[in-house]
Image (cartoon, rainbow, N blue to C red; front, top):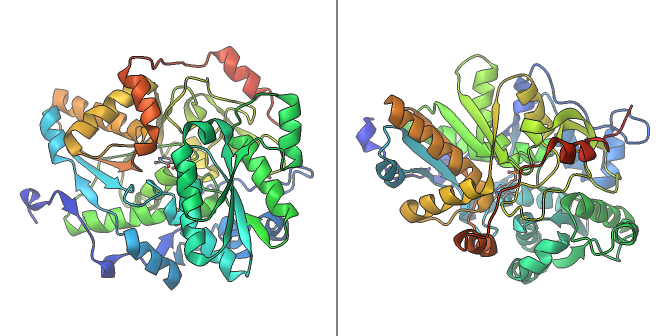
Length: 456
Ligand SMILES: *Cc1c(COP(=O)(O)O)cnc(C)c1O
């Protein structure tokens, strides 16, 4: 099909939707490092992981070999409510930028969670239900994951307890009400409801919380409540696996029109959308079938890839979770108080960390005012009001498109537009009022976090 036939939006038919998730670990020569027991430093066994996580999800977590994993029919049917998600050719943005580059984005914000997180939430809730559990616990930062999980749990009639980072709980009351609409109970973290929460409150009175802290509380609540398990919205191998649907759909849609991306860009918090978007393309690269330039984009104020170290670290503040080998800033790292753009987790998916260490991917960090400039520029021509997280990817997509303008190259750029930013208007407001500033942590700042890495 010729170039000018490419529509603004490429939708797949229901019948073209993926029937399998793609497990990129199967094609990695260097497998991601295993999770370690924090006490013995031995790889976590399925049995140990099963205390915290659902059985089937433990299998997926440990599966480095099966390339394709069938998506159960019930999950596929749920996906049909909001998928396939559109692959959009950003003609209007291209026109505005006057660039010869061809820009595409895969839009994951078309569901009530306003993000890609529902792709994994429904899978995790499904396996919890299959196992006959009563409910699940989790943490949420900005609230997208908590919302997604609440939606999945209400659909499957599971209980859902969400520990929400206190500053978000206070700043985003509407996000909290969305979760409660779906029947979840929402507790600001740190809270008095867990031992670890009480300890953190005693040690740091007045703290507004962090993701690492909320994870510790959610894990404790799960392991102390009969019939509950803990679920996590990013970072883990299983989450990247579920999110591979983003990339598989994108590839199918692009193949239909004979499009091959040169550059693939995604924002990176814990790595799930980026891992999901690039997985199938990365598989081709790993097998030597095609080449792509992958770019992970992270905030300059939380630069795990670009300034962190590749080491085993705690996943949570309370140090109750297994140790993961990843690019990390240290589990005690907390981004500066003025940071408004999300993507604040201290670590990064082990799969992406290994791929990055092996040189398969580039990473860049961007400052938040530049991110919001890109967000606004995008919103004004493409109509969608993007999430601050997603706007990190927009920033680099625009930068790359502008490079093409200089060189005259007609590169094809693909990026992941992970969600919408309607609950982030407080951050947008600061930006519009000129009250948003950039903060890049000094080496001294980072040293403090890295000193907390486990030593063995
Ligand atoms: C959670 C979230 C992210 C970052 O998480 P990853 O696991 O790195 O993908 C990015 N965008 C949106 C909209 C999110 O909700």
